[in-house]
Image (tube, rainbow, N blue to C red; front, side, top):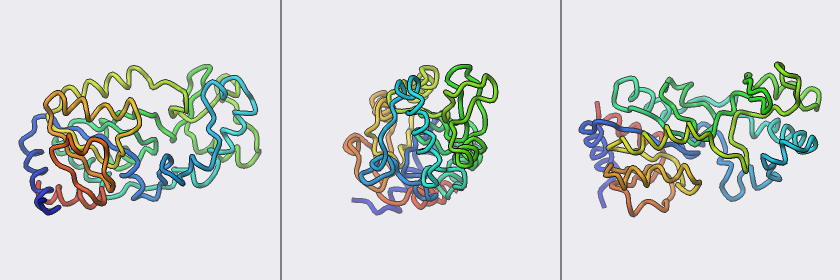
Length: 252
């Protein structure tokens, strides 16, 4: 097996040769910014009752529980800052080496680092969206209002109370336009970097598999093995930020 340094050098070569490189990111890139992995055993979701989308829509008590959960400091991502991995990906985009970034993350750290072509498959926790009128608002003031009053915030536009974070909730379908944009990139790329994802949650996890099936090179960067490791052209185990930084050094 090649050393991590040699693997990073190979990935840098592939990036230099590629016409279209895209990144696909999951929770593993953001845990290095202090954001917990919600889905892992013992993670945040294991300690809460999941509020399904249809329950949120019909039941005021479910909406109250939803906002109680979202006001938990452990679930508040607003203070988190981008880490080295986020910054490397943003620099690659600015240098024309990365054409798009598809992410399962809802923390907005890619944009804070400077990435602009970001496809947020599961939405964003930095904004809230009214499920009735469709208006969106910054999420932090609404979370603070709930912490102060204990009351479900009303939509500032239509005054209804079916306002939730602009994320995909349990049982809520992904936005079809967002999903189609992501699959279009997966069909177009000739090099995909799958970073910090267990590659289990569907349909997002189908994107690296589709890219590989269409002939793209697939590089998996993750601390733990994934179910797609056998199909990848390179698998790098370790810190996402450290490995991306090493690849960036070889590119320079």
